[in-house]
Length: 133
Image 1 (cartoon, one colour):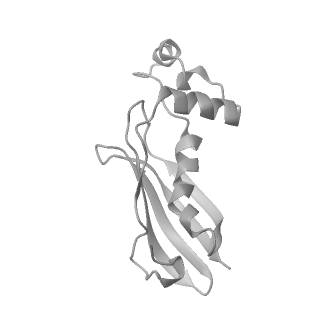
Image 2 (cartoon, rainbow, N blue to C red):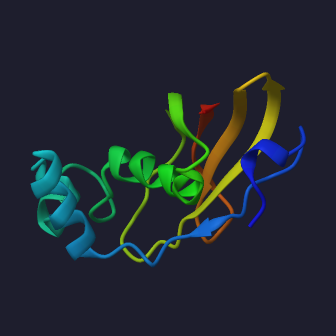
């Protein structure tokens, strides 16, 4: 694994592919986050709300994006995070997380980040500002 400090503008960090989204993932996240909206855990409630089935919490997907940077914890930290939700994540979706370096200035690295599903449909995009120590 290369150091983030050695990354050049335009290069990407190693992609992270999550396991297929499971109901248990979403139940655990609901408990951890306090977001018990039943569209995330109960099929009938999601369908009543006009959805084809339960959907993952947007913040579950956003939180997982940090996994792109966890192996670099000795080099620095995520200083800022801005995200736009682009699509829904359903049970059994396989989400791939990506980050590409946009700008490098002194100890500050700015990345374009995105999450795509197994159909290569973008479900989340944004930017991460990473601060080196």
